Amino acid sequence: MDKADLAALLSAHGGRAQPVASLHVLRADRLSAAGHAFLAEHREELATLDLSRWLGQASGAQRPEVIDALAQLARRDPGRFEFEIARAPHFELEQAERAELIEKLRGRAPETLLSALSGAGSAGANGGAAGAGGAGEASSGLLAPGAGGEMFNPSDLLGDLDLDLGAVGDTGASTGVAGGGGEGLGDLLSDPELFGDGGLGDGDGFAFLDEAGATESASPSGRGGAPLSGLSALLAELSEARTPRLKGAWKKKAAALAADPSEDWSAEVTRLPKAMSAAAELRARSSPRPEERAALLEWLFQSGAKKTTVVLLTLELLGSTQAAEGVRQWLAQSFLPRLLSDKASWNRHGPAVLAALVARRGFGEMDELLTSAVSGAGALGPGLLSLPSGGEPGALRAPIFGALSSMMLQEAASALAAGQSRVALGHAAGLSSLGAPSRRAKDLAALSRKRAARGDVAKLLALAPKRRPKDVPSLEDLITAVHVLASALD
Image (cartoon, rainbow, N blue to C red; front, side, top):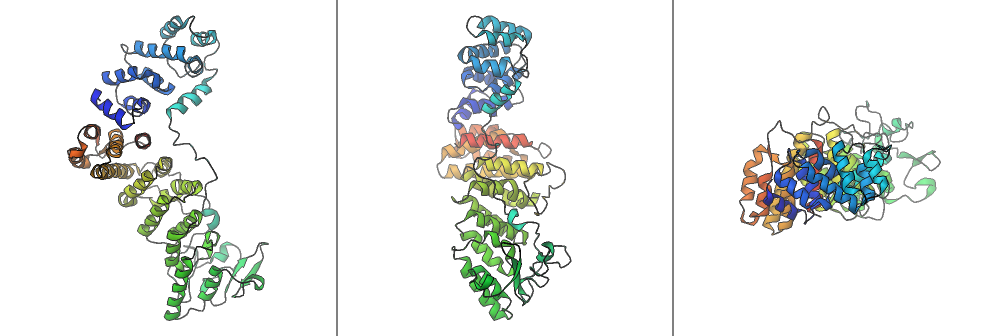
C-alpha cells in the first residue's frame, strides 16, 4: 500500500486511523515504508496491541521511531504504559531499548514505571492486565457475547424431537420420529397416548400433559370442560376431515387462524401436524412475536420444508425490527449454521443472508455465524439435528469466502448505482482486506472502471487480492473483513 491507498482507507473508515492501522497496515505481509510512516504519524491513536505489533514488524532501522512513540505514550499515560507495556511479558522490548526508555523517562514518569521497565521483580506480574487492556482496545467487541437476555432457543420447546419427514396420511398427520420405525412423539415422551401411532388424525382425539404432568384426553370440550383455544379446537377437528372437501375446508380454517395474531403458538409447535405446513409458513411470516416466528422456523426446518422457503422466512425475520437479542443470537449461533450447512447452501443463499445481516448492522451476528459455520461449533441445543460440517472443521471456508466476497461486490455495485459512495467505499475496504476468488477478477475490474467508482473506491478495489482456489482465507481473515465492514459502515 502506498500513501494514496492509505488515504483511501482512512476515508473509508471515517478518518479513524486506528482501524486502518489494526485491520490493514499491521495485517500486511510486510511493513512498508508508507505503512511505517502512517503508524508514526498516527501514533497517539494506536491501541497497545497495535504498538506491540508495530514493534514486532519494524525493521532494525524503524524500531527507534517505535521506541519514541512508546516514550510519548509513557509520558502521556503512564498508568496505561506501566501495566500494559512495562509489566507485560509478551511486549518484546530488547534490554537496550528498555534502558533507552528509562533514560528518556527518568524524572518524567513514576518510579514504579521505571522499576517495571528495568524488570525489578515485576516481570509478568500484571500480564493479565495487559491482556485485558491491550486486546480489549484493539477489538471492536464483535466477538463478545451479546448483552441482554438469554438466547431464545426453540430447541427448548422441541425437546428431543426430530420430526418425521414422511408424507401426511389420509387421516391427518403422522408425527413420528425420523428413522424411528413409525414411533410417535408419545413414544419419545413415554406416553403412547400422546401423539400415538395414528398421530393427530387417528380419529380418537389426542392427549396432552396438564400442568401437573397428568395425561388427559382432548376433545372439543377442552381441558376439564373449559373451551379450547383456537389452535387446540382446530387440531381436534382434524380427525374429522376425512374427505378432500373437508380437508380443504380445514386447511382454509387453519390459514385463517394463522393470520390471527391473538394466540401465541410458540409453546405449541410440537403439536402441529404436517397438514399445517402452509399455515405455519403464513404464521412464521406474520406473527408479531419474534420468539414464535423462530419456533415456527425450527419446526419448518425439521419438518422438511423447502430450504428456499425457510431462507426467505429467515431473511424476513432478520430484517424485522421486532427480532429480540435472544432470537438474533439463536439465528447466528445455531439456526443459520444448520441452514447453511454445505457448499451448495452457501453458494445459493449465503450472499443474501450476509447482505441481510449487513443491512441491519448485525456484525456481531456475522462473527458468530462465520465462527460457528467454519468450526462446526454451532450452539445446537438438545434434540436438534447435528450440524454437518462438510468434513473436517474449516471445510466451509471456501464457499463462505465466495459468499462474503460476492456479497461485498454486489453491495458495492448497488451502492454506486444508488449514489451511496460511502457505502460503496466501505464494501471496497472490506474487499481490499479479504480479496475475492481469482475467477471474480473481471468483476472487480469492471466495477472499478465504473465512473462512480473513480477515486478511492477504485483504489481499494485494486488492492483486493485475487485468491486462487488453494489460497483460502483463514477464519481470522474472514472475521477481519467483518470488522472492516463494521468500522467502515458505522
